[in-house]
Image (cartoon, rainbow, N blue to C red; front, side, top):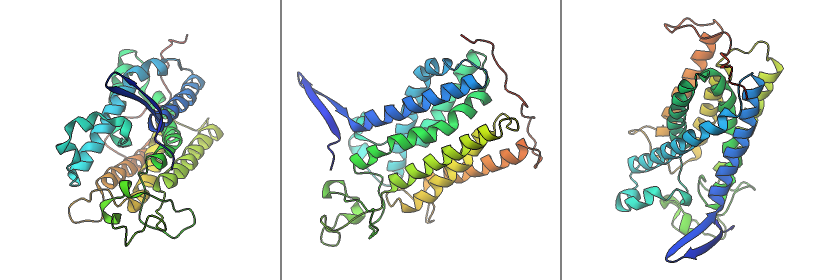
Length: 290
C-alpha cells in the first residue's frame, strides 16, 4: 500500500508531515475553484472574486465537514472522539464529510456575496457542479488512507485492506484473511459517478446555454449529488442507521437534497406551483469586473 505520509520532519518535539490526504484534497479544491472562476467570468461576473471568497469559505467548509463527520461517528456508536477529543482536530488523518462542508461553506459564501452585492444564484450555478469534480480528484486519498470501502467482494477490482484499517465487522482475520479478502472500492464508485455527473451538468449547461435559467445547475447538482451518494451509501457498512431502518443518516440528507432539487427544477420551469417568491430570470451582475 502507499504510505499516507509523503515526507515528514521534526521541529523539536513536533512532527510536521505532508500527507497525500491533504495534497489531494487541496488539489481538488484548486482545480474546482479554477474552473468555477472561469464559469463565473463566462457569466459576466468577476471570477477573481471566488479566490478572495475562498479565504472565508474554505475554513468554514473544513470545520463543517469535520463536525458532521465527528457527530455522525458518535451517533453511530463510535466513542473514539469522546475518548480522544484532541483527535477531533486531526483532520490530516482523514475524516471529512462533504455535506457538513456544504452547509457551513454555503453559509459563509452567502454572507460574503451579500456584503459584496453579488448574485448568489450565479455563484451557486458556477460552483456547485465543480464540487463534484473536486471530490472526484480528492477520492484517491481514501484509497491511500484505506478508508471508504465497502463489504467483501470477489469482483476483480476489489481492493485489499490491512488488519489495522479493518472495520469491526471484518476484523476477524480467520473469516476475512488479509491475503485473500478484497473489498468494494466505494470511493472509486463515487469518483466515477462524480466525473460523469459533472460532465453531464456542464455539457447540458453549455449546449443549452440560451435556455438555462438561474438556479438550474445548482438544482441539478442537488439531484445528481444526492442520488449518487444515496446509492453508494448502501455499500457503506460503517455508516449509522436511523433507528431500526435500513436508511443511513447521510441517506436522509440525500433524499432531502434530491426532493428539493427536483421540486425546484419543476418550479423553476413552471411545471409546478409552489408558495415561493419568483426566481430571477437572469443573473444580476455586480459591475465589479477587474
